[in-house]
Length: 628
Image (cartoon, rainbow, N blue to C red; front, side, top):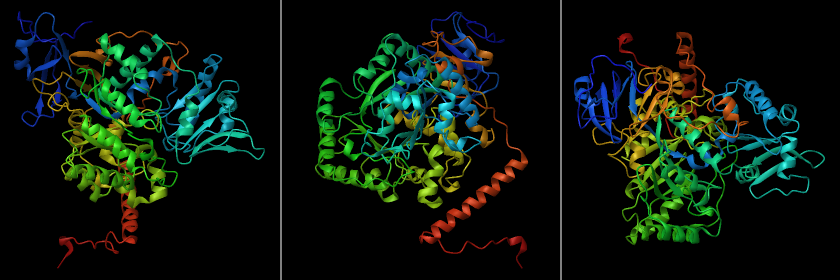
């Protein structure tokens, strides 16, 4: 089935026929000149017409694929501005995903079933995309439950940046014994007999968690390509057409980038990727950056795969940790080496992004930038930004704006919001991060997920968080004054992401001359009840005029992928994100949520009052209808 029959559009002989036409859609273009349309045409990967049936009709030729959107909402393709897509692709088919799983009971049943089919020598690994708060049980699995579910197969379950739970077999496979010392910044929990219990704690560094995971077997050869292609298809499932890869630990250049490079060469990428380079070895960062500067330049590549700069770390000593179950880490002096790295990048035309969770870190980084700016070396025309920035202050935002920086925020508090509130209080959580203050200063603010090791890669969970301020456990973290409307949230996931990779005007918007990247949605994002935003998926995803994902009425229009390999892969049996249906918002539920919001708003007011940030007494209620 190469197309959907559509009455009224008769193919015409033309030398300028479109490759794809999508009609009968409610199109949100993102273009202020023409914000709404009903039809769109794409030729040679680029949009040629945005309008109505009469406008696209001359573009329909004998070979044009014509798709009827059946009145559904169509949006620009989503762009995750901070996604570990390269690392995620190399591991995707090995991982049992608990993303979207509503109960721990279901998660353990999946784990038990997967352990039974996992061959000797392999691990069952649950790595990111979930939180204990999403489960009806509101707790982690116990070591005893993992041992019962998989007595002989190693099981590793990662929970946020906080902890990992290992069964007996995984402890043995990882080589943990009573004589294994605690690594710096981590803790191996031990029983009365001194033996490891199976709990690993980030205290506060997650290195113990990730270094343990790195001991598990990895994919080889063609399996890495197959895994990456299926991961990209899973991202296309949610309407993602672009991502900025933020690099990360255990992602070495060029070795771990070779798979996406090979796929790009053969035209098998279904997602546009702008990638960063992250020095992996402490003490060797300047040497790594110097070597990379000699090998490549930012914007090398094409519209499918391109270098975007350095980061998200430049030097390990400057990195802070995002484990909100632990106190903020205190850093020793790091500025001298950090300044060398930034100076090197600026002198060679390299932009960068910086992982920075806390304002204390951001202020120290800004002091280095301001020193270089005084010498005329910063930003030297280069793009740069801060990632995360949960506790950034308005003073720091003013300094960032003055230096021409940008921001990239992620919905990490969808999954860690409860931990943040417990440590810092509801008042601090209300501005974590201060999104509205960023936008009010004219800063470009891209949005992303930081998937896959903590948050889910499903962008609609992040859009739900931007709009509602709620965690996956349904706790209101950000009140209305620090939320954004649906159009702004969508622009953060489209136009702003394009700006962060220097591709504004090419993508993130639907108008002639832009890339033909779009998604037809399962529900209308602009009208569904807020709780149902997180349940939206794409029914048809198009990248450069190629249909890269299709389901429901459009099933069979997308490109065929090779089967998931190896055959025992959790993805082959369970898929990725475990979707649950949206239920709409009943009147009773609406009243309940309103009551919660009022109570949480009062908690936040009291917290602010105790710190002198707001008047002690609540504002008096005045209604002119009851006045004399």
